[in-house]
Image 1 (tube, helix red, strand yellow):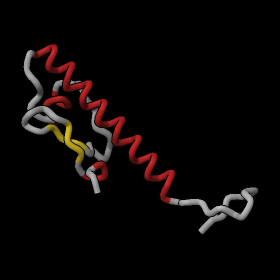
Image 2 (cartoon, rainbow, N blue to C red):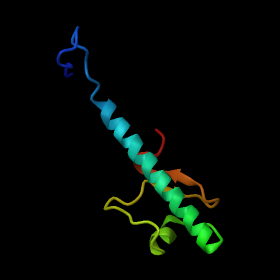
Image 3 (cartoon, helix red, strand yellow):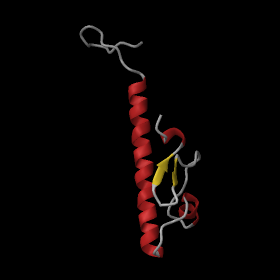
Image 4 (cartoon, rainbow, N blue to C red):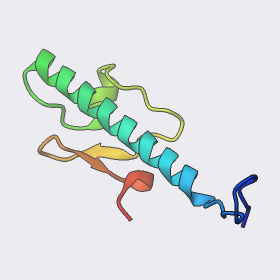
Length: 87
């Protein structure tokens, strides 16, 4: 395991730490983006979107190459899936 330079006692660096933090931040950002898009959709149309696809089709979201790691429940709640699903 790598050792942090200049740290007394040579404290070890946890290689999964930054990766996990980055993934958590990305999942949180995606969730907030979807919630914001769903809120805007509901304000404009008077009813919540039925799916993320409806948000994409109506221009409120643009998926990246990997798609989304969340989906909408029938109640309109953003649910983590894939890489964002709880372990």
